[in-house]
Length: 215
Figure 1 (cartoon, helix red, strand yellow):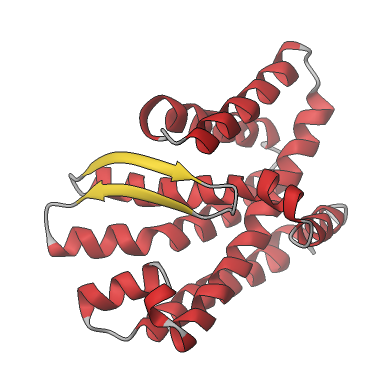
Figure 2: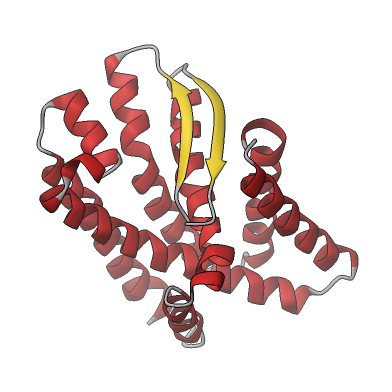
């Protein structure tokens, strides 16, 4: 599995190229915001819409039935991204690359049909889904595998970088620390504690991935 290091390196390099970061990094935003949406549905809440932006930021508009469910939904975004990252590399290591390919496609379809309504988000999803459909139509299995390796690496790298960013913001500018600040308002636990938890989760996921699925 040593070739995966090259995909991870490519994912890191892309974060320094604005256009490519916007184009490919949105897949991490899709996963993150879907985490909020899925958590809302699992706790009997509602999902009104999801917006995906070219800045790789996003927002999920949801409602919750209780304080506990609000905490779970707010907490779910970064956690879901870390879980998906680990699961992706597990499936790759287990040889289930096509399962992962169709899972990414399914998540994109669900978002397009049910949740995403802003212009950039819809255009990005149409491009993503259309590209996947072409790969299926022309039976390009090798390209599918390359896409899966690359998307998994993007989600992996962005989940770490996003958690680092939110941790730093939670200490220096908590009002702009997103979910960490949202959790502070809900629980009165300082934003930097939540920021550290997100950071710790992502680093632990990275260790697990390198320890068991790549090295």
